[in-house]
Length: 251
Ligand code: IPE
Ligand code: IPE
Ligand code: MG
Image 1 (spheres, rainbow, N blue to C red):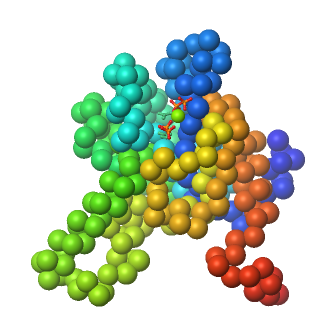
Image 2 (cartoon, rainbow, N blue to C red; image 1 turned 45 degrees about the vertical axis):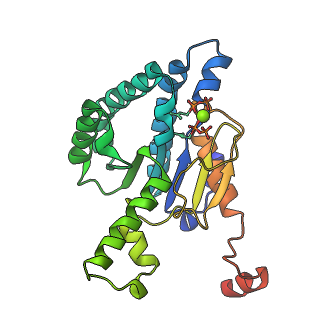
Image 3 (tube, rainbow, N blue to C red; image 1 turned 90 degrees about the vertical axis):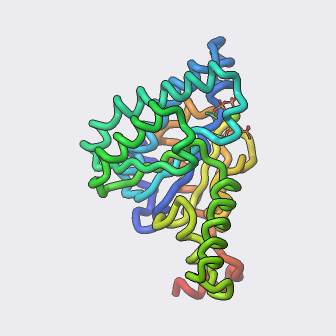
């Protein structure tokens, strides 16, 4: 593991890694267990990821924990996920403070069950002064919802005469999103072998490098994180330019 870690170029780390934690249910099924067993075992992977990323010096990790579409799952599973959220935050806050991790959340948070909302706010409040790394939980999150909300906010400002339509630019839009102030993810990882975005950070991942891993989320370890970062560092991020131009910029 140290070997893999030493291959990471610390001067070229992604500042922000976004992760679609997928495959808990299938992992549980593989082990002959109910889906909730998979969600519970996914928490370990969250801890590994958070601590591994913080140790390297990554500044932001955003985890897709519950999508707006996930409300459509059986009620018992939704309840179990909400309970797990409350338990995990309560249990991990002390460690997060010890490790200098600040908790944040994006999504339609007020629509969460009141206990989940309250515990989340307590976790955010208790860790707000930490500066080593920010862990962003996407909860009741949907990128289309976030974009619609931003559009409405900006339209209202235009109607109120606070902004001219011609002055609306990418920065205006960035500031209207719930990720305001957070750099866009350079790397987005999805586990479970599924190759789709599932309504996650659509605007923010416009130029992210995508990594689709053929393992289930509870199987995700620091090694997978390290390997994904190494793969990211071996890619050439061209941003529309040619390879020769990118090579030229380096010299
Ligand atoms: C991801 O695992 C966790 C959540 C979406 C909350 P899944 O529960 O989606 O697991 P699969 O994809 O059904 O295996
Ligand atoms: C995406 O996983 C949402 C989270 C990881 C929270 P899903 O399992 O809900 O995605 P789909 O439905 O397979 O696209
Ligand atoms: Mg899934």
